[in-house]
Image 1: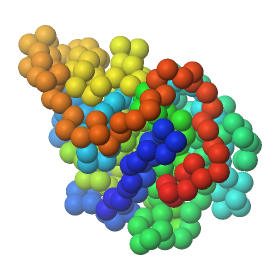
Image 2 (image 1 turned 90 degrees about the horizontal axis):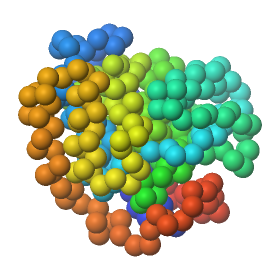
Image 3 (image 1 turned 30 degrees about the horizontal axis):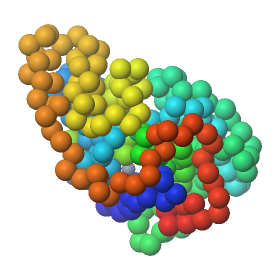
Image 4 (image 1 turned 120 degrees about the vertical axis):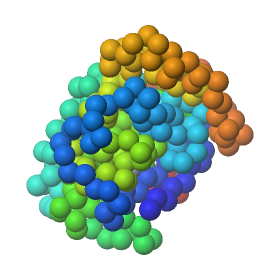
Length: 278
Ligand SMILES: [Zn+2]
């Protein structure tokens, strides 16, 4: 139940992510306890790879995350007012874990780079809970745009947390892990322990935006091993092989002029920038 496009547009990359509103096969409603017992290093490292180092189902080329403050704008649409506080709290909670500054700005503020708006209509037959995420091939997050499905109030909290996670640079879905990003745990509305660990890890200074995925996978695994107090032998077993895994796609798809040498600056939001992305 996902549909997306990933393509280059003005040297940035846009990803569309749709959140299924159909209950998955094994919905779990617990708060943050790993349903099968304690979180394992192997699973958390896989969750990181699946969430941060994939573009939906394809291997990503590089790690992407925010390096600039988030300017959060929530639509002043009447139906959105009841959820604006929850949206802001979700963004601030994740930003606190990530160490990213959040500034709430007015709707239509030109600085807005993290935009949340309502959606009450179906979009091409897909779930109207969705997001689009723009990043450069230097791994700099430039913009997140989230559409919250107000027509499904029972799912709004999950919609917000799921899509805001995408907005922090998780472009994939760790389906097999107990994560708000997983479709398997389709009833999970709140961040899980796994989500907090992978979010901390994505923003750990030992990882860098634009880092190639094989190296990022290995470094991330070692960071997670440290967080979980894994034994050295377990860390070696789980992490040692990860750097050998090469991305199979992306070099050609994402080749072209790079923004790596350009200074970080507000996203270029010239008309048409995201025309194909909605
Ligand atoms: Zn998603």
